[in-house]
Image (cartoon, rainbow, N blue to C red; front, side):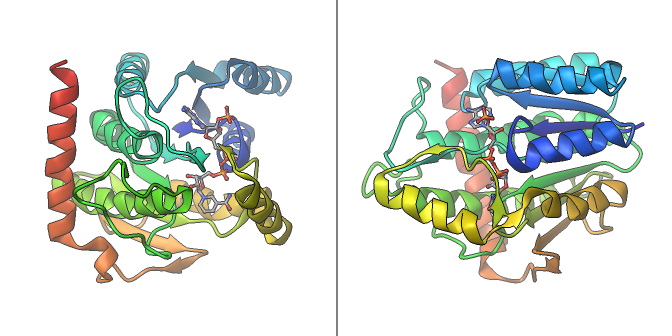
Length: 278
Ligand SMILES: NC(=O)c1ccc[n+]([C@@H]2O[C@H](COP(=O)([O-])OP(=O)(O)OC[C@H]3O[C@@H](n4cnc5c(N)ncnc54)[C@H](OP(=O)(O)O)[C@@H]3O)[C@@H](O)[C@H]2O)c1
């Protein structure tokens, strides 16, 4: 029995993945912000006689403090984590700032993934064949990094924020592999392809219309699950790999630049140090 932690496991790809692995006999820890959806996950597992293998951890992952609490709770409750699957995201047409002062998309889509990956590295290393699967948009339309304005105070746009987030996650994969590459934990960046999900967010009218059209052409959520499950079953050999719709992405692409990754890692540590000293 593997222990699989799924963020954003209350909707869309994360939810379908959580139910798949409950059916397969794994222990699944869903981390999410919606208690009613968390209860629905636990009730469904109970009905399938798998109540003992289903766990819900309630958290708003846009907050650094909440990520730290989740890391502490998972570290205390589980001796090993076999897979950490990162699916939480929330699109925002209008810029928002968390109570801790971070732009929301940066906080949830990047900073949370940074904290959870590094924070659970110790528990992942205790597993037999551990892997982090970061579901994002590796190398796909990779956005620019606004180095002097990571929170996009100037010229915010929802897609710019999301594409920058995808690029930050590419660089996170590079720096995670650089720091933990000697260990057993594999880091996999994965673009599932357009998938018909809840697409959680707050949309202006043109974006809402665009998202509705995208959903019309997207694959059903069940189709996104087998490639993720295959990676959890047999992680790639390389410390870092990236896939888009099943195809391997060449890590020599500028999106995975090692200097940029080191720069972002240093910037992030600095931001988090300042956050902790408040
Ligand atoms: N769907 C696609 O076409 C597509 C394409 C490319 C990449 N992806 C990537 O695949 C992953 C999953 O996407 P999806 O479309 O399946 O997502 P989704 O249906 O929009 O669900 C997003 C999940 O994130 C959770 N979430 C939002 N804000 C949160 C917060 N503050 N704290 C904790 N959890 C929070 C949501 O919780 P609630 O249930 O409470 O809303 C939900 O479970 C994402 O990383 C996305 O970037 C998806």
